[in-house]
Figure 1 (cartoon, rainbow, N blue to C red):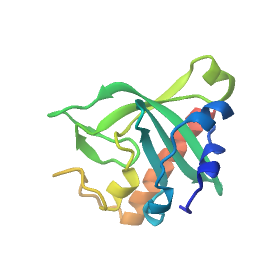
Figure 2: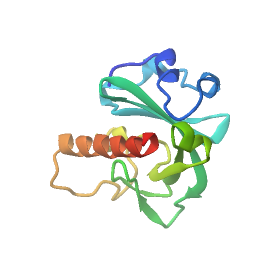
Figure 3: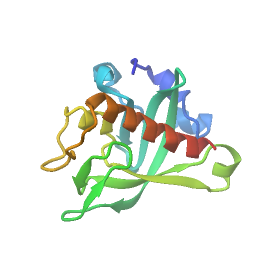
Figure 4: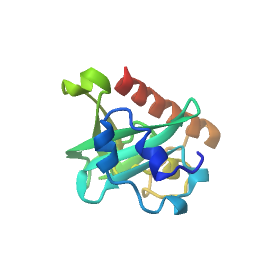
Length: 163
């Protein structure tokens, strides 16, 4: 993914108003992000821990989603799998809910997915971040195929949000 500016990120949101996008928290360390290892950039809002955001490139353009955590997190002994990157966590997967775009979102309709709580899926897939013993399944897929699966799963989630 190519490096993005704060303005590019703010203008890429598809499921919130321009005013909401202007007020939301964007990471201050964009220049230090490992862009070459990111299929998407995800972050939690430090002032509002129930809010999260992600931005990716779809069809050559940045596309961003505003998300909320429902407070449902897999804890301690319960192992859960991220629906994007297929990483298994003990206590590190949250139900993230995105308001649908347009009129459906204004009416309160949402789409949810179980996602790595820290939104670091691209780093888990590449082995740059470790979720602990047994977190990555022994698969016959190559690294490139695992990355493509993550990108495809994210694109499918975004498609449900924008449908």
